[in-house]
Length: 567
Image (tube, rainbow, N blue to C red; front, side, top):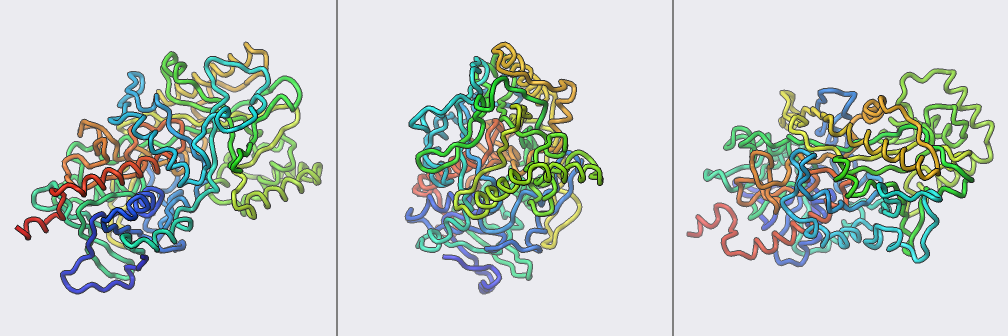
């Protein structure tokens, strides 16, 4: 059932009650609610927004950034509405690798308190919820007929070319699963429910309630046996830090760990990769499996090579030449450059990332269009039908450049860094909550991962005689930071661990020192891997929902305060 906090008028002293209260209806929160359908426990899912985007509600995500060249504003890449950021995600699904869970002495503060196998068990179900087809992430598993090599003649002990990334429709979890939640007898979804405070009891270990406010001034209280914060990597930290009535530094923050170790991903486009041979020597685009799901291969640095080279996880894709430079003489790329006003911010900022746009540059792009009108028109039509009209969207732009000259698009793990963090500022939003101050930082080890991986790939291509990767090694860091922290991957702000001095939650997602408060989402990831986080967010949320079922079955898991009253 859906209802709206704007319409709820409980009597004085009354509270909404549930067995499980989930704060946030994005990928994590909706997944948990779905997993708890039919469990016999009452679930209340709180969503700060409504069913559609609302400017005043979205403005509650506004905040400050220490260095605007390194990180987008906090209200970008986050969506405060039912479905959360799945309403804008690109759909890329990739599981973490076993090495990501291991303690690595060359990656500070690495190692998960749970085994890879504990998450792996939930990946197939997560894949289904994300609508990314079967859980098959190698070309050998996914395709009946083995595809042609990514690059003909390229064999490397350092890079695997057979792993895949799979793509969701992309699935808006709010739109896709609203009907199922509406029909569930034990699940209620409360919209426009902005949680502003987490109330902790006198024993300091139990959450008694969460306070809910609306922009129209209504105030509600929600009591539950267990609470789960599933509001995203930035908002989770904000809620914990802002709840200071009993714990002066914020909940779970006895050792100043909340909001620290903030990671995104390291991403960029660099160099020129010239592949020898005809155009048919390269197969770098999307392929559809038997279920019609788009899949794409990449160059993935193997676990053995990561250990030998002492670097983080790294992948690269063959990419089109830089769109901003009209020297590519490619009509479709110039079309994208000129169409920036019609492209969402999340993608458009990469189209004009090289400084001021002048008339000369525009003129050169217009000449590219004129020189290839038929090809550009066909590209535009395919883009329109594949992105706007198709139920399963074509994932991204693929161009087959003449002469087999590509740039390299890389995506790399960012190391945990205690000095990279989010804190509260002195500015308050319309509900009176402190806004966030984001101070995202990278470390020398991050640069070393990208530098080393690129150097090894260039060597392997040259040794095999299949091509040449030319780039400026001294420009790696600047290319890595050209667009700053990567998009909406807000990771590690309430990380898992066994030591409260370096973590916020335990291996079950429960906040250290708290009996009934949990965190779901990328906030709990101790390390970032090379993988986009959504698939692992969903897998961990499924796991946490099952853990809560078991927890609630225990007689001791009474509603805080109720047990004492009954006694």
